Image 1 (cartoon, rainbow, N blue to C red):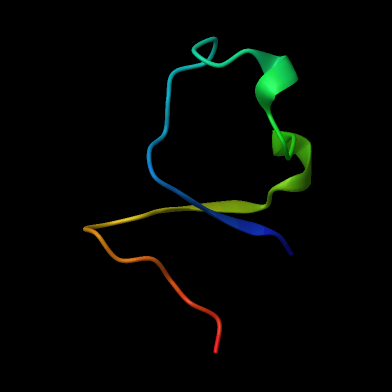
Image 2: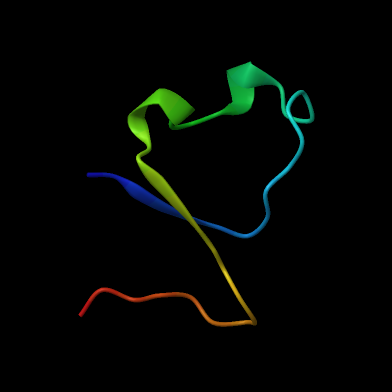
Length: 42
């Protein structure tokens, strides 16, 4: 399972596909980051 924590979700077409590091086909879920904190792995 791949969960991506993102700063924002943009409409389709706003990002050049050549600039995407991890294609959406490999991501199972998104978590929209809230506030000014990031999740950390301990």
